Image (cartoon, rainbow, N blue to C red; front, side):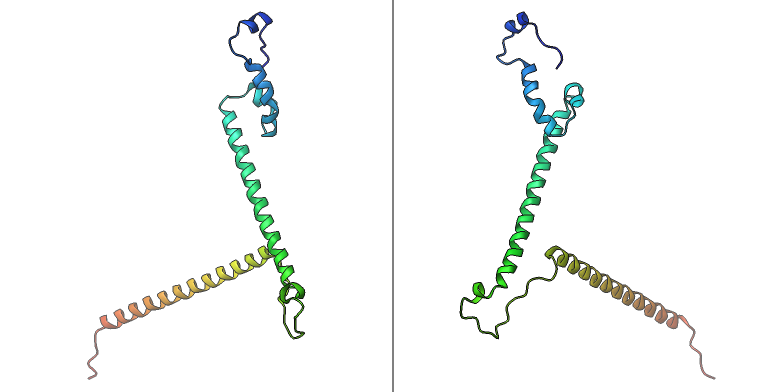
Amino acid sequence: MGDRLTEEEEQSQTSLTPYGDIFDELFPQYLVMGMTPAEYWDGEASYYPAFRKAYQQRIENEQKLADRQNWYMGQYVMAVLQCVPLLVGGLNVKPSTRLPEYPDKPFLEKAEELKREEDRKKYEQDQTMMAMAMFQQFVKNANRNIAKEPKSTGQ
């Protein structure tokens, strides 16, 4: 806000904090939110709530991502701990005991492979169902055509 009040006008103002000071205090916060100085000082007033909301959403998304990453890290740690005989069976582990193996691929990669496999199976099922429906329709049409044909008398 380039317009500042003179000292006389400042004293006559009833507010305890001039609006210019409030804008000056909030300026760094809006810069962090991604607003440019030109947008902050000269932009539309309707942009402020949109930037605050977008910033809040970005923070929430980052927190959810960090939470998910931490959860996956915990899954990896659990997989490692299950492979350690002392923690699985204590000191009484028999030599013939087969311990779980550490995963050979990252969990997300395995999940993607499983999803691709499920999608492929569903596609094959759909194709089979389509072929069966087409065959049934072919048989219906053939039977209808056979029923329409005049019967020969064999003389």
